[in-house]
Image (tube, rainbow, N blue to C red):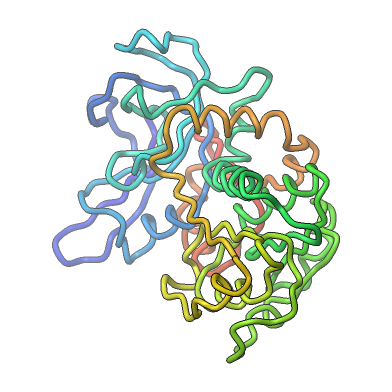
Length: 328
């Protein structure tokens, strides 16, 4: 079978390339899946790139999510022919992932694909969209206030799906982007307001600013998250999902004490099974399919080395869907 394999010899930098490998090379697991689609996420770029910081054991097959058809199973919950989707559980980092024509994983990591949802659509959503849904669900659980909901990193995978979901659920959405040429794309997803990244990320010493946003999905972190906290309406929540802007939080406790702002950390990796099923069912129900299709950029295994570099530079818009079985 074909797979994108990352190899590393001694102190040399990792090298990624498409190879023919044996199914016997796959790691242990109860379920073997014929992979149909995967995606390209920021973590995949880190695994493919010369840094290789997320990978501990080589050779390695990246791809932190995939959707496909069960081929063999030692677990009664899954039978050959079942459609499944997988996100999280360190797949593509500590365990071989979706950039191969077959994957072998633990049954507990899988989720049945929602009825009427294709494997291609599932990967148009992917880990990024699954994370966006978790963030929206967390905001709903804490109550979204009146006024626009801010989405940072709106042109990326998490941000794009968050914009489309929030708009479909009837919320005004203010989308933050560093690329003015993405304005038409974000308006098409449902954004009612475009905010320049430099405006929201402007350095300020004020811990509180005008109450502006009824909630926030932050896919960036760092300075942008700190600035957003000071602009939340009283009692509003920020669902933080990304670290592209850094793990440090240069903020004070004042937004939490004086405005009752909630900071909600979203981890898509080890979600309980019931929550994963609920999130995927909500995605299939609430995410408009026309908006989903507008996000898709098709790719193949052969495209992945270049795409891995591009996503680290912020050069990927929307959702890159990898047709694992297609040859460029």
